[in-house]
Length: 376
Ligand code: ACO
Image 1 (spheres, protein in one colour):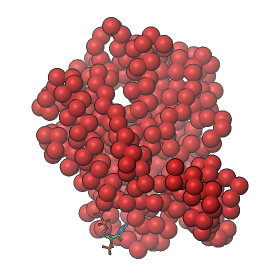
Image 2 (tube, helix red, strand yellow):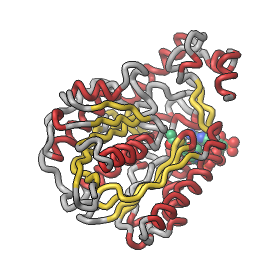
Image 3 (cartoon, protein in one colour):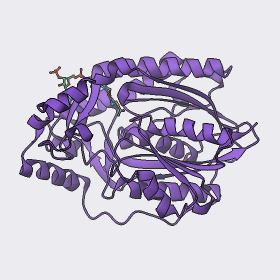
């Protein structure tokens, strides 16, 4: 039987750090509130497009696996914040990596995009369709975040990470998959302003209004990730005590603690990065996985559980059996260009553009076509 081993991993965190105190300079919030309600202390703001972060992360992952771009058959780009709609983003990564033979596909299931991409690439390798794949989780949310809304502005950050999958005859890689979608709650998280129903209206691209019911999402996220984790463990004949490490989606420390508790796994075996990076949506799980490897928390042959949820509300829990190698075969010299501004300066620049053009929030609510499209 063919499996899809994870043989390479790499991350790209933009260097500019936005602290809770930075947020307090323009929002009615505080470090105390943000830390106690979310566990977040700081997050990153990118000075480059998302594709550029992805290319650095993917180059690192390829070097880690000892592969070159020309060896890649498939690139899956998991994100809900694509630089452009057309051309797709995976094609931009393909050309930068010199992966001329690779199929290039974008996957958007919001925060679960990397996990859904990992499941898709694994299935394609196991079916014999492709041999080597790069799966990316990346997000550049700072450009379309509604920085005037404290309910969401404090929660998100930018970043990217990638893994390389290779066909293997040894049982390793993704061995169990529970995917689902709690679509009844899709209204609880909507970014008005993103999407074609706003085209040719008076909405300026990037000017967004977030419909966001944090408390409902919180409860449904805990329930969905816990149930998906129980399902995948049952299907694979594993018990919680056999899980060496949980690498969960990082939307809120309290959500992570609740999922760990209800899944019967102590926090000592849970990877947490939310304090450093906030919620990077599709990038959170792969960044946490890369950092777990860097910190020596992934053991050869160990079992890793990856529960996640995102807008939709899509959810999943993946069970990975790690292979023998936990260290990179090589490293890439590809890095981001220097950043000359602070994170707060970049955020203030986005806010200034919005203010200069006048908020088009009214347009986000009004046009009949938009309301009809959203009601579907
Ligand atoms: N600073 C200060 N006060 C705030 C802030 C802030 N940044 N944001 C909200 N508040 C206020 C609220 O206005 C409210 O005030 P009120 O009682 O006077 O009305 C009060 O704090 C309490 O708000 P709650 O919503 O009860 O706070 P809660 O403990 O539920 O935490 C949070 C809110 C952090 C959003 C939590 O519900 C959560 O994490 N939800 C899920 C997160 C999420 O959805 N992430 C995105 C998922 S999808 C994806 O990952 C892309």
